[in-house]
Image (cartoon, helix red, strand yellow):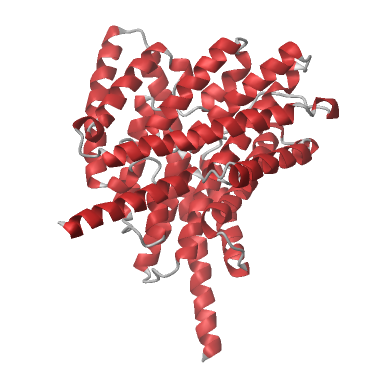
Length: 440
């Protein structure tokens, strides 16, 4: 009897794993490929000099800002990247909605995308994958299985970046936090199936770099410089998000705060018509960084992207923060590279790889995911070159640099991850609100 029960359990678990792997692969792949078309449409609209297209685009952005406002009223869980809200639901601090949130997340992230916000598609990929798994659990009446829901988020991440290893790493570093053989086998199976499906639909890697040369042992001084600039940037980023998020929580009934989404659409509209080349999620900007040769311009772009990403990431629009975070890290890398090329005689051919290393380092610090960052670096290099050994020439140095900076960030600077900071703030202000209601 016990054997039959175990057999049925593993059969159902295997069936769930296969179905979810295939569904996540199709859903995220389709979401990503449509997102690329939306980005192209956005670039066309903002790049056009035709008066009637400009007029139509302005009218469209006004309509979309109104749609964004009402979508967030109907489905508040899709505000921002949706990941902190998802984490709260997994901790039973918030109710999880599924079908309506999946639809709202996809539509509203496209609204942000075509409007030209500095937000990405990877956060929504994580959320819609987790919510799809939760919806499946509801249908089969297995809502206690949160491990599959947590795994699904990582699978969505891996599909978004076309990087199966980083998907599994993200699932464990961000969600599961512990190794379990059954869950690991389930995760590998789900990831393989999802990756096969998504790669049939989408061939666009979110981290594209141009051709490069590999830095030599004599150029090891670039790693301490990358550690310093990314530590400073990551520390400022997390704390500024906390300050701004706290301000919005405290003054949520203020008219400007409540309707700030409309102001953000206006600002982004103006910026896209004036500095289009540095707008969008950041993939295009990262690819074009090698063409910049002025430190003044680079620091200006860094400042602009830094502020825009923080403001956009604090809600009232939908979109992911991971690609924008990688973009800021990439700009850091370009600045270090340009300084080294100009003053220390570093070869210009190393620049694309330094930019990529800096991008993943900055991401590793802010999200507290060093293994995911290393997996992203490996997948980006191997995707570009079809050479699965190239990345290993710098892997030891990059690994040491990332973990040194990670140790300093957590244990010396005592800086929490971006998502943990947002979750703690949400819990804090939720408790304060309940306390006020109780006292009244």
